[in-house]
Length: 171
Image 1 (cartoon, rainbow, N blue to C red):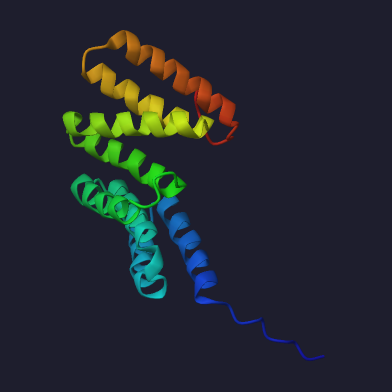
Image 2 (spheres, rainbow, N blue to C red; image 1 turned 60 degrees about the horizontal axis):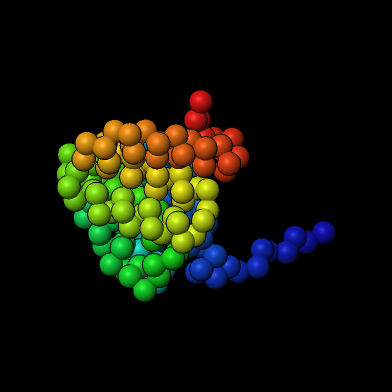
């Protein structure tokens, strides 16, 4: 019996698989492997430069290089300017908040938190609301409104529970 060869895959299919592999490497903190794949993806799927920039930013965050992460997230958001409601736009903006916050750039982080809060309100998704309210809670704590910060943090926990994601630890 002769085995047939698998059907050829498109560059889009290969790109999706490669992104998945890069994400796995990032989750495993194998940043050099993730970087190799992501750098290669710039050539394979140039239309997804924003995704490449976002994933490379996650690599830099994992390595503690917040300035490079901030720069890459800025690039991703520029490329996503025409997609304000996309998941990638929200994720990049949320990650940018934490990159700024981690560097002590609290004043720069506040407008990012405000945009997240607005976007989450429009989307009405519990995962967005959780991320946005937590960022906004941190921002309000920095600005001295502890009461609002505690309220927002409690609401973020409620939204995290509503997501039902088994990997979210909220208690």
